[in-house]
Image 1 (cartoon, rainbow, N blue to C red):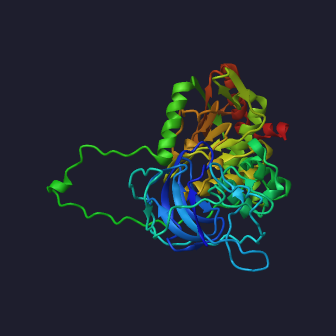
Image 2 (cartoon, rainbow, N blue to C red):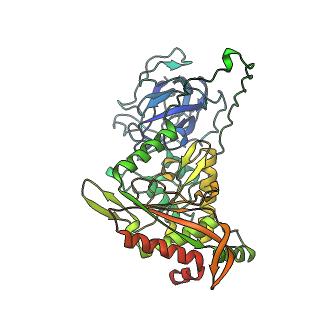
Image 3 (tube, one colour):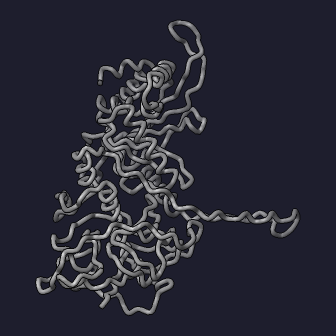
Length: 477
């Protein structure tokens, strides 16, 4: 007899408490495989596909596209068939055995007979349903009524747990479906890992470390292609003088999703961080020539942003005070031994700051590739929460907007941000004579609690020296 299991919106990690349903990937009546993505949701950090840990038939969906659900609210119910007895064959379904925070599978009592089965491969996402990117149906309570629900009884638990029975080897505690997807996309068996979290909980860092050890690199699996959006048809222009042509008194736009998260972080930064800014003009002519020579030598092209990032990591090695954060409760400055470099990127969904992990250990070629990957993921809205958090220093290239200078707001809880303006030909005194050179304005906004002006000025001066004379970097290679 089939049992109906309820799959709730899991804890996606990074302190997220709610998510908006963007697109359903399955319909009621569809057969889903274990770990198959069933819904695309947008959190305050990213847009992600949520996999279901059960295999079976979808009996109900909870929430319309555009609805916001809190963590722990029901997403779908799945009718799961009983496992076949040993030697009888059959096609029973089971849970994935991978435990997500807040629910998940558990050990079955000894009285239950368990037969190990081969877990099916994750199926492709269904394409039913239209995009709900533009819908706004308000918030839904955790007990919202199912959408398109079939006549089924209340969701039943297996052995008193919502996740069903565990496999023979026991469940694998995983912090979020994003971590599980990363492992699956890279062919990594989570059962071979020892989690560094509480009670052996497997974190994203554990998976990334295992992939590096296996020689697969620190870069996460390529993000999935975005789902197509349904374009909105433009409204016909009202005739001049008609009532419809009147300008509205006001337009209200909710601060939610990415925009809301950015607003909260910027406001917190201004409230808590006593920031100061210093800046300097630098002659970038030699840096531009060096890049041209590097790209002419063959191989992958090196981006200017990658060279500036290399300069940043070298400067932070000399002035580590700026690669830190302030623990206000403990009244301590926490200095990091690694550089996770964030870079500001403007997208259709708003400002995002993807993070390049261990930027200090990467060369210009590796930095170029990672910047390109994260930029594309930001453009398509497929950045994961882990790729948007954990930065220790931010590089802000606002020169792409055609401006020379800025006093940016520090990306809380970091302690500093380097801003780079546009590089343009300007009159410059070079070797005692007036010449036209490629000039850039560099600015450093820093938390005055972590250092004084001498350290900030020394950092910025070193960055300018590397821009003007790239050979200075040879000392750190």
